[in-house]
Structures are given as structure tokens and as C-alpha cells.
Image 1 (cartoon, helix red, strand yellow):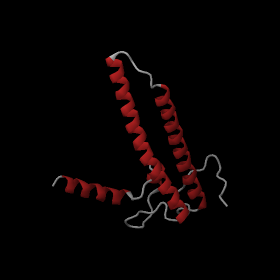
Image 2 (tube, helix red, strand yellow):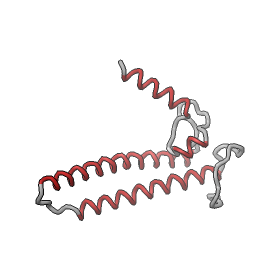
Image 3 (spheres, helix red, strand yellow):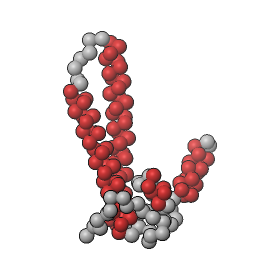
Image 4 (cartoon, helix red, strand yellow):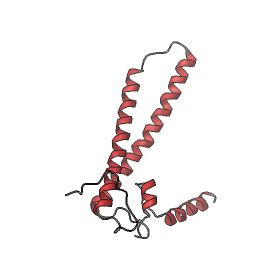
Length: 138
């Protein structure tokens, strides 16, 4: 059974890490974020279907196509983000949420608050980015 969170609940460092309240807090945060992205995606779909009229002016048509391409790229990034949100929700279910994939150490609550889909601690993320940069510069 899921705990009932008070409306002003915020995870605290002093509490046991990833206790049931913290897990529920992040579950609700992730589900809300996913719902918002899905709602925006549906709005885009309706917008693209409605706005399929042919513009007689070439410049207007080009502008419309550019806007559509940008909107579709944004939605594609959001689709990938939804997949990461779903993976985070799975980690909540399997008990691995909030722990770094590399070190198994807890990811700071501040980092999870800012990026609830994080899979690496800040230190591991920085190492990962330095390695990427080093290999990219080769």
C-alpha cells in the first residue's frame, strides 16, 4: 500500500534514504511529469491534424513547415524522455531507484529533485562526461 503524502512533503536528508515516503514522492513527481508530456504530445498531434491546410504563400508554407519540424523534433525528445521516466518508475518498483548505476551509492536528493530520472551520482556523471569529451576529442 502506498503512503499518503502531505501536500507540503519534501524529501529530507535526515530521513532514511529512499524510504516509502520518498519513493512515493518521486513516483508521483515522475508520473505527473509523464502525464504532462503525454498531454502536450496529444495537443501537438491535434494541432498538426488541424493545421494541415495548404498555405498559398510560399514563405508562409516554408515557415509552417519549419515550425512543424521543430515541434516534431521537440516531441521526439519528449518521447525519449517519457521512456526514461518509465525506466525510473521501474527502478522505483524494483528498489534500485535513487542509487548510482556505477557505484551503487545514493544519488543526492538535490540531484533527484532537479533530475528525477538521474541514474548516476554527480561524481559519476562528471567522470562519464569527462570520458566522453576525451574520446570525442580523439
